[in-house]
Image 1: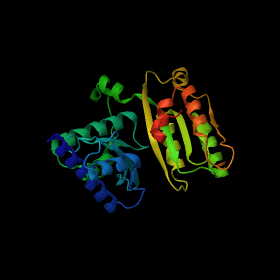
Image 2: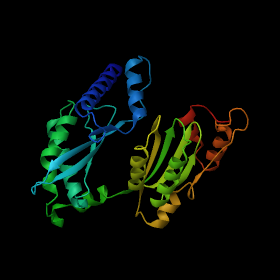
Image 3: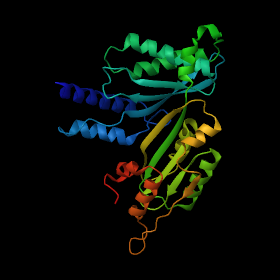
Image 4: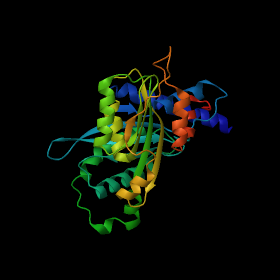
Length: 295
């Protein structure tokens, strides 16, 4: 049945992720970026009646490769496993600061062609990683004539994204962390808000690359628990300043402290948070965090 097949695919994904984490125990080499999606997938496998997971498991594989002049270059593979994987291909984007835009596009389309050829319904993350390790460095020096790139390929891959990240933390009290959140958002031209207390909530919005940089800095700090609860991505037409501004739901990033007066002073007044989100047109996010209607 469909149900059986789904569960089997989910089990294959989990065992492949387990294998990756035992082969690459360090965060620098392998890191699940969406822990919630992984937890949801495991829950689905363990609990016979659970509904199909709502988000793909996303993770990073970082690969060091030697370039001809004997220095090492790091390539990052941002990966997502569609629910039907391995019967469908994984989604992988390879990046490196040394690749030009067109080199990156060519590298990714060649990797995809390799996967289409070689991954017939089998788990293929390790072979994708091997391929990147063996071939990626060669793209750094490729002189690409415009003829080798069809215009449609180029424009399709060069879409600039506007992203909004909804981050959940077990608690946020620390002054320095709160200062970092505000300073980094300002530096990266991100707007949103930070709600300190327990739980702690951070929302940042702006260019996708800036949101990703913000997240990679935040998650390096020490937290009892922090994760991206929800992520919104919208593609931009031109990515100019005015267009980016028009997508924002928050003018700047400020701290929002909803005081719950009284004995539970450190616990936030969630009713006030709900009304604040509702005002900004984000009421549905409340359920993502707390799983209940806010009123």
